[in-house]
Image 1 (cartoon, rainbow, N blue to C red):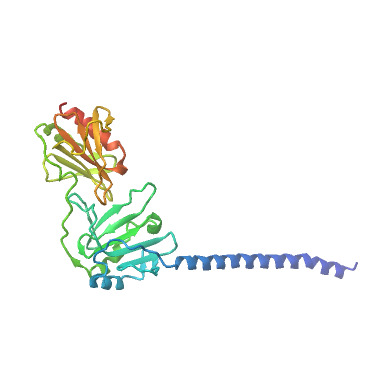
Image 2 (image 1 turned 90 degrees about the vertical axis):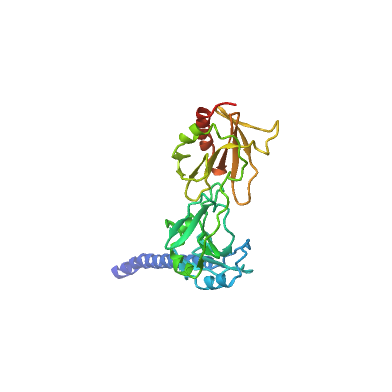
Length: 312
């Protein structure tokens, strides 16, 4: 075989290698383009939103407000709503998992009571209400200082490190009238009064912090203490209440250290808090406890009740 023939043959493997490389690159590019097309289709799929109680959703104020919402919110594009479209809704989405939804004209949340701690964000009062479902990071912001009331919902994935999705809505929110909403009654405030003459020592020795992240707030009701945490329902203690109306002889009780507790799990609409009654003391003591706080608060408060109130 001549040298020329040998050189010509040696070029074939290189040519084949180049061809395979080009095909591999083309395949990768094709996969990336296909993935982007699929992602874009998914991200632009209409967002399904169910019909929920929203008495003012079809009002002229909500219609104008929805029309004036921005095309982008915390990095997500405005999304189409799947049919049938409820009144007063909007959504922003980057994927089927990354989305922010909004409802206008909703009811005042149950958590907006005398102990609620709304926060002013860009001139608008918002109340944060976190979902207490185990594993859920969903949270809703309610515009408690405007009418109609607006609720914005997102989870940690949609927020992507943002504190909240509502700061960018301030301009649109200015189209809604400022209003003074009447708070719901505070937890335990509707209970009948009992003997509070033995409550002084207990009330003087309650802590400023409770259950890790709850901080005590000032309240006007006598013989009552409350602790709040952002996005959560308050923990409330009231000393000197009447005997629990749902207590019956033989009903199941809970012994936690030195205190016997009766848990009244009759829940009000929109709240997860149950009422715990400390029994066997010189007066009955009630504690409103959100179910997601676990037993930490009951243990802490129970030890103080045992120390600072006399037995029956």
